[in-house]
Image (cartoon, rainbow, N blue to C red; front, side, top):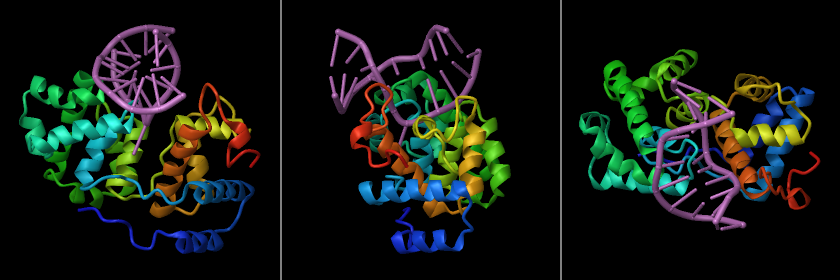
Length: 236
DNA sequence: ATCCTGGAAC
DNA sequence: GTTCCGGGAT
């Protein structure tokens, strides 16, 4: 079972900040972080259990609310199919039926199998073995899998393998654009680099930061009717 | 630019 | 009733 990271608390994060040389961007990012941390509190992602379950969740949650993913994962569990081998051996239509509540069930059936195939063939079905591989290498390997794009790869890296890879998402783009820190020419890798080049490389920090950005995006920095007036990170 | 999909939230 | 998701492939 994946337990809560020990020592991933405010004191630890404060110390991290103190030890890191501050560029202008570093100051912006940390001030953003603390405003989020103080208003939403620690998030302790991933609401997950085993690293494998976290990876499955990362694939199933693509463009889908987490609530729906939980149902699909519950289905896998109740059918005792939450293992690489069980998933690989299941008939497509059968797996699709279990994944149904997560939406895109036919697409996700293929994507899950693609991932599980690599996990079994290259890493003996063991996430721990996958975690042994050097960060850059394993990221590239994950990105080769059809159905795993940059955000899903980084989510698996950070939340399942506990490697310090910053997860960027649509909220990250939106928030930084509205803060005038970036413009629309920035792509995924550039924005990921912005965080990783200006923050201490740390699993606990990246974990909380991305989770907090998601919270801010859901509650305030929405596409349609942003609640800028009440937003805790307004005018950062 | 469009497709893939169910379900929660508004 | 629409909108929108903890995206990615074609």
